[in-house]
Length: 107
Length: 117
Image (tube, rainbow over all chains, first blue to last red; front, side, top):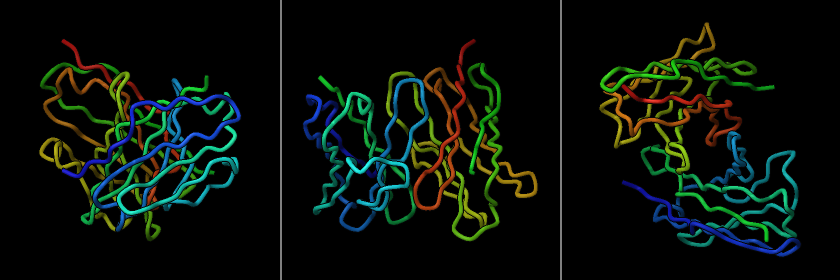
């Protein structure tokens, strides 16, 4: 079955840039999406179609794609950005898949 | 404003069938391109996509759980129902439904289902 691979954890200091990667064989052909999940809360969409930002999401969140890897970048990380981040995509049959999640720690 | 809310039992016994209902507002499941998906998350673990139903009644299931899942919709009631058969303690999780237009946004608050005898 199709899999998306994320690093389990990323740590950054406030004000620095955090980059979270997600790798998958179908990513060159399928869009990726990113969700932020804080403890005890439902996930929230922060990036769609690789690099589009929904309304209400701060400009410091951005997404990019290169080959089989997509990247969520958080510029000028703030304490409130500490959360779990999940990438999501689909295969050609429409089967959805999530990555294993990355815990972002703000030091 | 789109909202979704999951409902169903909080406790089920092993081998029983789980039935969850997603009741939504702010959109119609008869609108082209719209879907509702189900996603679960065991305590302390990652999100797992389960199933998705589209406005045209097209359905998609997780390959690993396909034999146990059924998703249906009642457009007039603004509801989507997910059934999962033969529940096991490893199915203990928070179950979410979400509005889908190619991506999941927004999500319901989730409902915790515990499988235990």
